[in-house]
Amino acid sequence: MSEKKYLKGGGFLLAAGKADKIFTPENFTSEQRMIAKTTADFVRQEVWPKIDKIEAQEEGVTQNLMSQAAELGLLMADIPQEYGGMGLDKASSALITENMGMAGSFSVTHAAHTGIATLPIVFYGTTAQKKRYLPGLADGQIGAYCLTEPGSGSDALAAKATAVLSEDGKYYLLNGTKQFITNAKWSKTFVVFAKVDGKAFTAFIVERDTVGVSIAPEELKLGIKGSSTAALVLEDARVPVENLLGEIGKGHLIAFNILNIGRYKLGAGVLGSAKLALEYAVKYSIERKQFKKSLSEFGLIRKKIAEMTSRIFVAESLVYRTVGLIDNILEGVKGGSEEDSQQALAGIEEYAIECSIAKVYASEMVDYVVDESLQIFGGYGYSQEYPLERLYRDARINRLFEGTSEINRLLIPGMLLRRSLQGDLPLMRVLENLKNEVADTTVGNEPSETGVGEFAWYREKLEGARKAVLMAAGLAVEKYHKDIAERQELLALLADMIMEYYALESSFLRIEKGSFATSDWRSQALLNYFPAAMERLRSWGREVIGAVVTPGQLAVKLEVFEKFCRSTPFDTISVRDLLAEKIISDEVYPRGSF
Image (cartoon, rainbow, N blue to C red; front, side):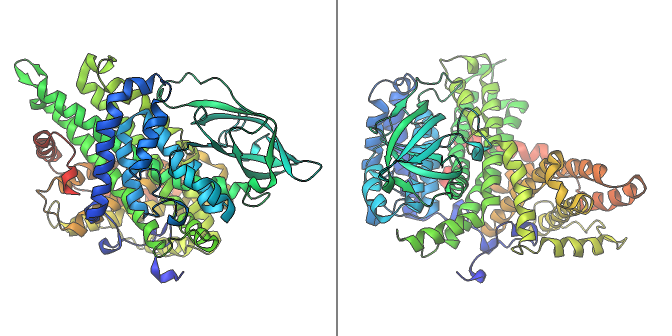
């Protein structure tokens, strides 16, 4: 595929982005909006009335709902048409995931099934494997993904499960325990990772009725109680050799590439949860009266509503920008051939950095939103009679799913540096150019103001923010070189700076692309978010510079860095009030704008 056709993964940090190159929610087609509506209607009409039964894991309820979802095409978006699916673009698939995010525990069942349980077979299965398993997965025969073990979580390659070829060469005998397996109770097929002869990390498709396969009792969990989570126990499980998935010793490629998909999809899913929490909080604030006034009339409540809206808007902007990047690189790759699968995997891997950003940023955003929503409910929010109690508990898992936030924070700058060393990104050249620019004592002088909210003002500040991130990264690399991989606190700070810049630029480019006036709620959301984001960048960068620069150079380096991060304050209180008024008037996050 021609390099000119797409933007390099991680390239957003090396050059200012262009609005006409990104995908935004305003670009959804009428067909995509219909898919979103179909999913939302299913959740509200079919799932919500059964929430209590789902939470109690009442027999047959979740399985029947999965069959209903299959009839609507909600399980087959990513399955090629020749194997019983729809072969939709990733934006359509993400919209299904987002709207399923309102379904509580059922959304976890759905996401695990359509994502990590199905996609390994879509991308790595042989033609025979695809024909055997994908039509059933599309029709609601639930699947599961089995990577984690009692002694190996983030360190997946430390797995102890083994696979030994039988004497007659017809079976692999699998032994071991897979922990925290979503959908374990209901699954017909499992994608299981084990080490052939205790050495070669490899994937297998394991059927539920295989001799030697058993399911341990359900885990007792803090949240997502309606999803099945249990251990898969393998005791000389006889798996036919034709069920080996991919190549022997290449299981890590399956595991990590599928996790990249899971990460951006998790970002989409939590958008649905966050928007629902905001909707509950806004409606309650209107109905609840204290001191003879609705809560929605109080300044501190309005601030909460505006802040939640801003963070959802920013997360939405970066998630769908990422989805759009992947769709762009996969344009024309629709079939289920081996070549199509390899092109699709390469395309998704290209944006592994952006996928990790979507996972971390969105999962932390939803925690903030459900916490503030519960606060608006007050004591009632803590009661099981109201929905926020469950949303609050359910949200916590997202910072653990698809690689913990800590692991992804290490991956983001680590992948950026690795891509540079491999020659995929000219990061070192950009850092060297910036170093020369910084040597110019006039660099970073405060640009002339062009009016709050106007594109030129945003662009100037964003360019300074980008250089601030690069400056901090360059100084850290200059001191530690390859040893920076062992400096986890520094990497986490750099990851936070990289994520914040990607969030800011994604939101700004969305505003610029839509030519939204400063009175538009989207512009207000960014205006509210922008100053605090710049302060966070400044704080993280100062900490990095303090750790890597000698005392004699500290004052000079900080002076330049501060110029990059400088931002004139303005009346965010009034901006928040206008934004809150819009959300309170609509009583929901403005979905209609899509």
